[in-house]
Image 1 (cartoon, rainbow, N blue to C red):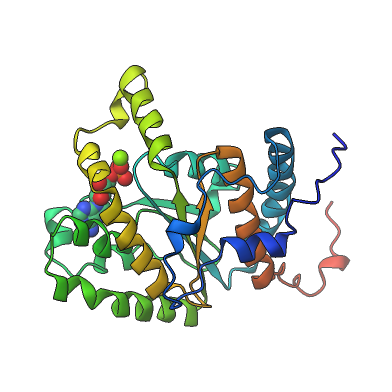
Image 2 (cartoon, rainbow, N blue to C red):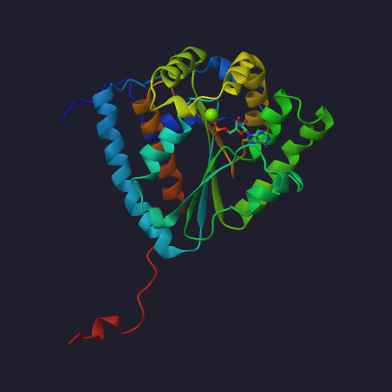
Length: 281
Ligand code: AMP
Ligand code: MG
């Protein structure tokens, strides 16, 4: 309580700017970003700050739901063990679940594979008033598909434009799109994998195939860098959130969400005429 903020801690605006990816700048953005960054918070401060941000988010989500004229799409991408599930649990379980839809996208089923790669995605785009959370997404089709060679280069290369156009369409039709890459370090991933091997209650999260992706780390980072640079736009920005420390990660994500919900500025609908005359007997 009452911890004076250290001058190192960024304002909300500064933090958002630091996390945001400026598309098309040709910078190797992931090389320059520290997965262990804490922005001057210690754990106790960050936890308190997160709780304060969540209280604001709860009110904003209520208004988004009541207003019912806009939606939010929150896309979460990361390497294994970066904390996608834990992020969803930490951040979205605090909101009214009636207004949140969480959709994981794994290896495509036969039916999904028989369609274009956006088919399975589009049907889960959020309806008005709702927040849609994608645990992995259409980006896998320019990430794992590229790195593992599941499609030819000419096929995945043209997908950046498809994706940008698809997202622009959703934005034009009233969806606020927020995309987060959880930036975990390779060292931290090793520790978390080890825990999955050591702890019986975490064994289920480990698949031997996860180690293949770990071996391909540099290729994945290259693919992420390209994807983020080519598809971070004003209407569908990417944020790189440091993910080695969960408490720092949570504050970052809560602030990103709050910023975009405040931009939407949802309002409670005007009451029916004459409501103030009604007497309930
Ligand atoms: P997880 O999120 O850890 O449960 O794992 C889901 C797996 O599905 C990951 O290994 C992803 O790389 C994989 N995956 C997701 N989308 C695709 C896709 N479009 N093509 C191939 N693999 C995918
Ligand atoms: Mg996994």
